[in-house]
Length: 271
Ligand code: 4AZ
Image (tube, rainbow, N blue to C red):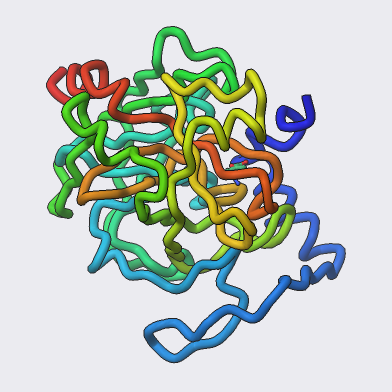
């Protein structure tokens, strides 16, 4: 269905965005001016987002190629473990992946670049719309950044419709637009399962996924944000996974429901 045509563009889509669009001299207009960020800057702060700092969100990291190209997000859940999306790492060799922590600005050298020694992908992962979109990376070192606890089966209350959640990432600022140079964040309410089923039909699997969006759209994760965190109640409740376009009214962002994978993730953290 249509959603499948618009997902899994975290890497290749972003490459096209990063290389082809600038070469072609494209510029992409945004629907509305973004509010000023904390440092007073006004500009296209992607799909409803504003600037954020890794000082405030120390556990948000990005995945990059060996040449430094950012293609996904992730969350530090132990000193040497990062949770990301399976669709971000499937087919990759650990030696090809870099994890960048403590760097708000992709054009800076702030923070640390870790290598990856192991990629675990959920054994049943096939495709993001089929669920199981979770991967755990083991780093070659222990990072000093604070970690974020993952939601467990005790945290089902965090998934109530209307719960305010935080999304973070360095992805595109509009569907098919340019990736953000800076870490951006936004707040979105979780939707009910019924709302997400109405949007996506059988592609939405409640045991595997949770959705977040305002009914009117306008705020969302987008290409290159995949693998990054959806946070509520001080815990990692979701992993940016897929959606129809970005920030479209009636098409929420879809996130891996972390609580249902907590046992497997914890096993990987402790392995
Ligand atoms: C992506 O391709 C992607 N609007 C991530 C999030 C969403 C759509 C696509 C949700 O990485």
